[in-house]
Image (tube, rainbow, N blue to C red; front, side, top):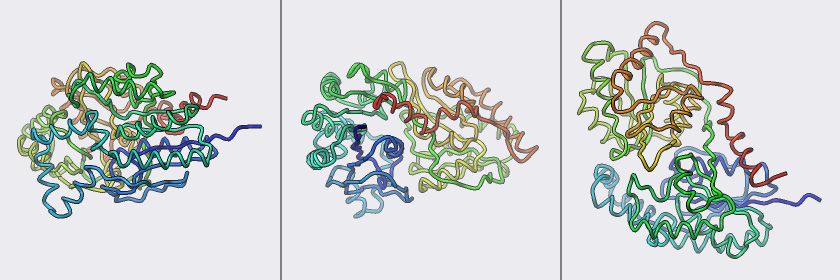
Length: 428
């Protein structure tokens, strides 16, 4: 007789938690659930940033547990002062904010005060024990961030050693390039102790995977699939449009060469401002506007502010070129952000501007998909040439012709990604 398989998903970030961090957890849970007889999902009760869109969760049984962490506190403070969020964004690079972020991401403070925090860990562990006993759970999945999800899974593994644990990473927990934690040796010791009990560790990219192999040698890369949550009419803007949607990290993303290329094209009158727009949509409009002013691009800039996920993705579908800002360093490469997979679904050429050294993983992915173009700090002439190529093509025909590699694109579907993972965790 075939044995029943049940899975427990532990995910702080899950709808309706309104940051894009939920997307990987959501899709992994959705497509993994097809291979299990029962799916249970533990997530947070107190949502600090609610989604503006309704994301259907038509799979599994959701269990919400009490939590209270710095995000909830920040939400409470901002409700008392409507200007607090804008002030916080404007000062996001101050040494105080950087100190607090590192403090909250470092062990042991991340266990107590970080995302989720000790209340979430305790409540989720207790709820998980009840679910496992009642439903004969055979597998658990947990994600980073936050580290709280992995701690809950570790507690379960201690109590139920026969359960198969899949520990997932969207980001490297210790990033030398970013200097994101204090007491690096202590962090590495803690993570190694935590993850040695995982049956398999998965990472969003080869770059992230390299950073966690030392914690558990059974670590593999399971990249995202392309995100296709919403359907839109295929109608482009009536003027040539290049778009960036999402957060900005000025310490990491330095698109000076892109703005300089646009500045030169305008000064040479190769592009006409009345037919060309550079759109930004996101919460960091003040940073964007500062860059725009620095390069005198006000004539073509359109800052649309913070939008819902569906509205942002609609813009990506209407654009002619989608802009990706990433970074690469000697210690950390392959920062294939979730934004990249949104852009793939839009099917428009992607201009990726990478701050730092050459990124072989990015280069390989772009090449096999025919996704667009990658630029580095010294590529100003190359940038000018490619912007002008698509702009002139649009002027002649009202559209641009760029086709992704459709055969390779099939490999980037979530169905394919999870079917490959399934072979590892549920062998026939």
